[in-house]
Amino acid sequence: MSKEEILEEIAHEVKACRKCPLWKTRKNAVPGDGNPSAEVMFIGEAPGYWEDVKGKPFVGAAGKFLDTLLSILRVSRSDVFIGNILKCRPPQNRDPLPEEIRACTPFLDRQIRVIEPRYIVTLGRHSTAYIFSKMGLQFTSISAVHGKFFEGQVLGLNVCVFPTYHPAAALYSARNREASENDFKILKAELERHGVIKA
Image (tube, rainbow, N blue to C red; front, side):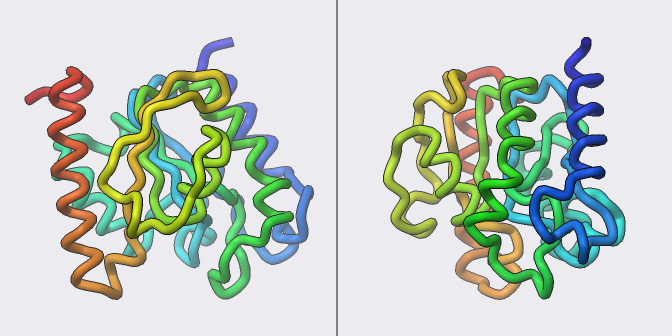
């Protein structure tokens, strides 16, 4: 099976999933999408209102800002893969519960193994805490780790993890917005240096 076919299979499983109660309140599950062989994978927290309506990741206001950030890298969504810790929207966009994360992240783990990204960009504290736990790293706060590179193993893959703020956080704070844009400039320089994107 090709990477595309395996990701399609995972997406079908996500849409039929009833491992936690979130399936009862969702309109659409949001498996994630993008390039099956992406060298850069973005991992957010959970779908919001518009993602739940459309079944696609980052299509609301936070998604528009993510598109702005991707334009700093001069890449499009079709160049990268975008997923979330949770594949279904928590009611009222509340934080993911630990049992929901436990039930849902095996899907994400499988996606990471299939895609084999060189870089994982974690968007916000929930995805950063989860990926750090896979690397055996202690997570304190997003403000302490954003804009830095952490090399290690995730699910047996050698990856470079780059935490930054969740795009939604930038919508409510000019400081976070500026920090996000600066982080993406740091990321751009790194990706250019390693030939992931053209200088």
